Length: 123
Image (cartoon, rainbow, N blue to C red):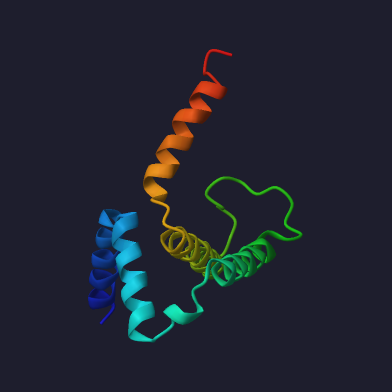
């Protein structure tokens, strides 16, 4: 049984590496439609839900001070919880962008270019 679980975990990880923002967007849209939740997905509601998730994410780091990259001293269960909260924030952000008609991938790439001009590497 442990071998089967490890294979399933590996398959999920491999699929996750190939996922795009557009893939996630479509899955979120389908998920909301299947539950008739689109009526609740106004920009304001999605933003407030995302802010709530950012609060939950913040709680994980609260009172820990600075932590090392990769979180080497954290329990795996805490890292898993962190991944869940990060995912919640990402999914709400993607849904909010879609509802607002913003191509998040395009907007992010444009922002990186704008930041490169504003903050050149040679300075």
